[in-house]
Image 1 (cartoon, helix red, strand yellow):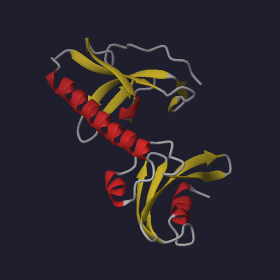
Image 2: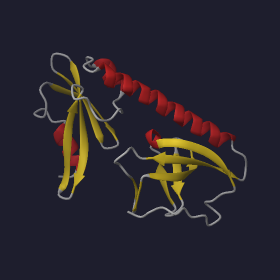
Image 3: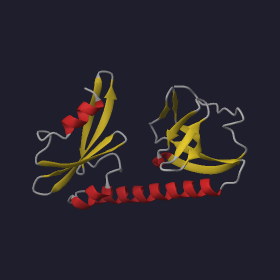
Length: 188
């Protein structure tokens, strides 16, 4: 089954008790809002496997393993796990703060400098950048509008910055993107 086919099957009426209300895709998490007697949230972790895509169903009672649930779903559904809701709100505030700090630094940097951000994977996870698998990586910010994008020097490609993984940011003299500067990452 393709990812698109899986998403369509997950929002079908026979998937959950009650009526499908809304969906929001955040990375590989499909957030859905359903209504039975009251609204409730179901998060599906979309998992790629050799034979196609599968999913892991999570509800607030579990609670879900990610904190990217849309705020409008959180306000519409009954609270089942206060701790998870609090962490979702803190994540949103933190993400918006990081985005704002990156934009400010990028716009204030002087000519001949570049803004570098460090991304660090959660323990047990990796950051995959095409043929690279890394626990931490440095990307150089090349755009802050509309989203935050960075370039990875070893392959020269641009990537959308996952703000939840940003652990450091700094302005460097010179421009490693134009001087042949190459990081020494491990290929995985």
